[in-house]
Length: 254
Image (cartoon, rainbow, N blue to C red):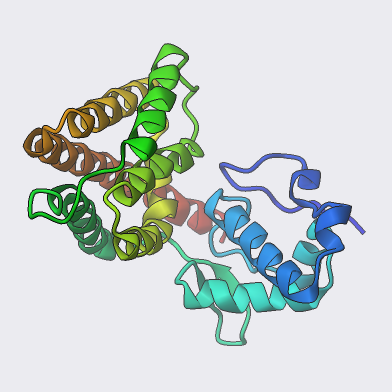
């Protein structure tokens, strides 16, 4: 049986990348169930499955090297997280980007991130330099050796924003931000197709974290607000174009 997945725009060509290792397969049933969920979730977010193509449990299970049961459970959970939609007959497919909700989610994102910065101004402790200094050093290294344009850069981008939020000391803020990020990630991948966007993002991240480390929180707020707002404009424009291309493609196939 050919177990190769029909790869999407961002997908690697080798299904072996996704197979669970013998050590992972030796884990307990509960740990394996979570591992399969995380693996399928990552495949969804990286575009391995074409939008609106049915996710066949057997094919996914073959690629991962597991039974269909944990795959079925993963699909149910991903549907609850909003990353999948259901056909009338119960099958699942990757949800298309919903631009109508995008601005609301970005508004929630910026609200959470700004609160992570401003809570210190309201007397709720200070930001942890033990988190911020390694974060600054990592992005300085990225500026010295810029990654190539790649939609998966979104994961590096998210890691910056999550670390910045966690440095505020409010775990609940960070947990909520992570949930919002998961919902907008498939659309945000459209932000990192060009070298100029990668370079600008790296520079903006460094400006934000250096301002926080220097205690210039008001400046950091201005920089963060501009950074996220600019990303929204780029994402909306490119995602709208991608959705149009997908619709035209389905029309040609029909």
